View 1 (cartoon, rainbow, N blue to C red):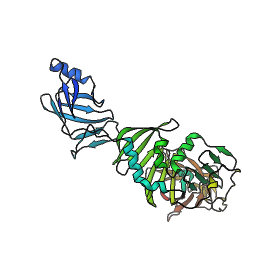
View 2: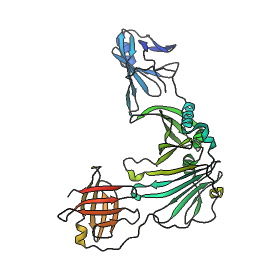
View 3: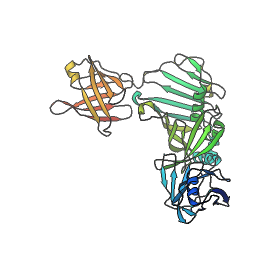
View 4: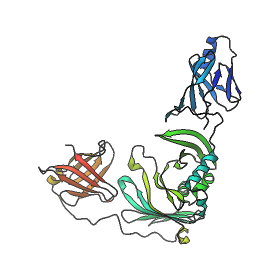
Length: 423
């Protein structure tokens, strides 16, 4: 990122000429009023770094802005001379920083793409990455309202990889790449993988992905520095090898890649001298968690023996497996009166903005989230116990001393939610 000299002195306009690291503004106008009007309406391009100057108030303060949208404010110290305030704002609206420490800012202090990528590689293990020959990852894919399903990833030294995911109802799907061709295998078909999907999976599963980042993104340029919460990040504008424009976001302190387009990397942990993201979020939730998927790895093993034939194009469809996430269920037929006792609005005990509505249509009970387009039938096992057919959630209605339903307990694959009845 461009930075500025903390003690930068400016001599009043109008034509900018750079002298060493300072900026001298040569006065070419006749009279203060003309100066002020012309300066307010103009942006002056400097000869050195293509930055420009823009006036806020000629005789009280002025602002210097560079192409990466970093700016400083300067106050008048005497006639025609201005000195920088200790403030550094981000014009993109994502954050505002105070330069309270008064640290040195330099016009020549830039961060290059090479520096960012080298720091990322070093954070992930540096030269140790070259020693990774195979990798096995075991975990789950959480699709929020759809629950979680088990997954396995196996990868080889030459860019090959294999991904298998089992669904709650017993179906499964596999994706593979043998270094030349990529495929998708289901219980009904074997097809070629789409190029965009192949690119994303290479980024996710190639054992040496950090070392290949410049291969994946042959065009990269520094966009700027931003704040995400309290975290400083460096943003790179990139173009994939397939010509798709995207952004890469790196944690400035740790060097880790934390976002590539709509893929988010979290929870980096050490595994045999290298570091891997144990949590990967796929897609932006935009306030709707159920639109986002979470890949959570419980175990990552390196340099284990594998059968390389697993990467080859399969010759047959996948068979169904036992629905591991299902439970055996009992059949129960409640009365309309028993179902109506459960009807109501239930408020999440830890997140009060979340409310569940239980309602009846004919002789069926349903659940939805208040304010969201979600409707799920809940199926009775007893007067107080219900479940969902596909995602494997369990619902239990608790009664108080007066035998009135007062609480709903929702058990998902990875959490237990308590919700208090409001009406």
